[in-house]
Length: 400
Image 1 (cartoon, rainbow, N blue to C red):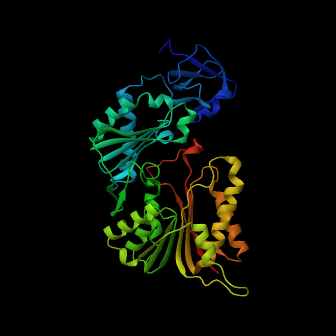
Image 2 (cartoon, helix red, strand yellow):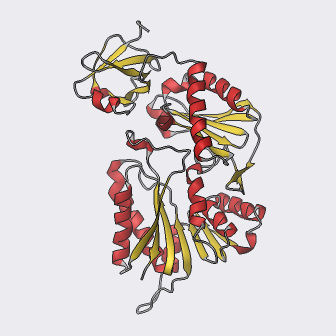
């Protein structure tokens, strides 16, 4: 390790690293002792020459170094096996009955730039950092040893790869996999297409919330907005909802949700509509002058995609969230529940709640908060790395 290039940080820049954050930006670097090769392992020291850890270097990225260990380590199969097995133990502890879940969640599991999702006996791999991508073959070998999967796929069309100088890469890395497959979430069956679906195939980060929100569904008339494959809607139907309407702009997603409803024996209480949710709300809350909208839903679920990818667009995103809640509140019955989610890291829980309450104020509504949600335990949150916390949600009961 003596020949390893050393990245020396400016005074004061080491504090964040000591606290547990693994990213080193270019502006934090004072000097580098020898020119490293992109993707190479480097050691990082503070301005007093105290070792802070080792990580992968990339001159092309805004994140020049991604730390992976606080001490000098050899990055080999044994290293990855130890880290991945440790991550698996966390999932087995907090989600003992899950058969589909996120195995490795990048920074949350001290493997910056690596995501591994498990869909029954198939694994999906994403490498969003150059250094991690260079070890892809080793990671695949380790995953085969630990899980003995039927197949390992890669879904590497992430926008972040372009900032790392990496091209898109999709396909089967090991084993055989053809077409959609069926997975289980909380005992329900879902058809997923691991080659074409959102993220790596499905929103595994909502797995715990699907079941939690369904607790409000018995006997309810439910509206599931941005339903995708029917996660919230099907759980509500299985929990005894009287009727569930699922809305999604994607005709393919709606078709898959219909098949999922049939597979789970709840098609009789489910309806589906391929539509723009904002347009649907406008059409269904439009009334003549001096008339009022008649509320008709006992449970409304709002789980939109992220409205913002950076801080500069947060004001526009907040306007979108407010408009969505303004419309939804018009259709919520008194005593009904609105379960609402935001998956943007740039909109924190406090700001998101303030936006919902601003919509309620404009509608002269009073809300009672009855539940708070976060991402499922297979997407761990490390408070020292704020970027690991992105999904937040609330359930509000309409008081009047």
